[in-house]
Length: 387
Length: 208
Image (cartoon, rainbow over all chains, first blue to last red; front, side, top):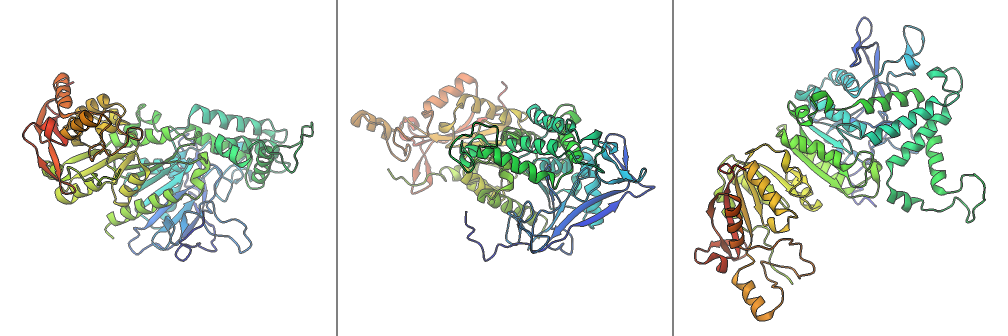
């Protein structure tokens, strides 16, 4: 769809990733598992300006394979903008002319934050599988340090899709006074059994790669075939049957006739191979294991006597929850479960369900309605802060 | 068929009824204009449920908190008497499960305001009697094949239903439309003369 607001809508332009290191010895970050992490680095980017009373800060959180690079370009040669560039920038939903946007990476990752590919100060080698298992709550606790470091005592909004939405919900629960509002998109209060099953198949693909070497592969060949297979499986779960049919159908790649061999023939096969290959150049297999585990462990119900309403009882934020009709990885019924628990707990919540063919991926793609609802919700929340 | 927009119908009656600062749930709230007027006039704390995307997005634009879905979705979670007022304004006839919606409404509200087009109005009766086709007028602004109405009812039907189910009726103020959206209460033979039924039920007094 052509954007008709070219004159007011733009890009944040060239941006840089920043790094914040804390919990240096003798300090540490205490993890949910009981283990400790020290030191801890978080990669983050910021766009727009923090206002004088620091009331316009919005924290953006990414999904499984995301990075701190949510908007703009790192160099003039970059072919692609940040992962949420459709929604972050001057005149966009997260309007950088009005708001100070922070996008934080997660611990356990491999894009500048402390994770299994970081050097373990005790051994001088990469942590690999000695890295402690981290949870969504741990990721949020680390981000809390970053927000304090940036001099922000209250966030106008915390927002993210998929695993980013899980972090946003956790933020509102862990630090109620600090979160004015939450925008949780295509997310769930816990991943379904089906979702865990797909994550486990992905992990097994990595474990069974001959190069995996029990995670200790940093000095040799990486388990790229396992990681790319994991990504191929995951990509199926991000799309819908309908969009796959529309995008690829049963069409063959560059030919019309079957070859009667096991080559990559169908377009959908070619697409999955390309996605797998593209992924291994930018992601660490061990990080994939740790982050999928964090998603699997996330469960707001079990942490609150099996009742989601109890999880939200102490929350002070207003909520915008967005679900997508064809998302089967984080089905809209799971968004509605969150919303109903919030309603029952007496919280202010908007639920919008966006009709789309695009499946779980929809939260990353341009959508006029999502754009408009986020912009209007944020505007109203900002007005509430007394501006 | 073209009929004037009756979205704002009964607003004056509802606004008059609701006390300052009430907690209000509007089931089928459309673009949220009733909730906004209630906020302005009575400083209420309002929530809406609406199925249409356009309606929900307009509500968000107005700064309202609204749930996109069927009106019966999510009602079961609410605690008893958690809303001072639940409003079903021109919504009941569209609901798939009116029995369930009414039972849940009575459970979760202190008072329910329910207004709907009165199918037994004289215009409909005369139309059916003499023309023998489905009435089309501002009460039923649809052709038979494209009507979203799922359950037609009359004032008498609703009164009987309340009696059978033990729903205490606090007030009846059936009315007809004057001008575009104004209302005039019909005291005489309302099931024949009134265009719209208007009931206030006592949810607090109802114990299921």
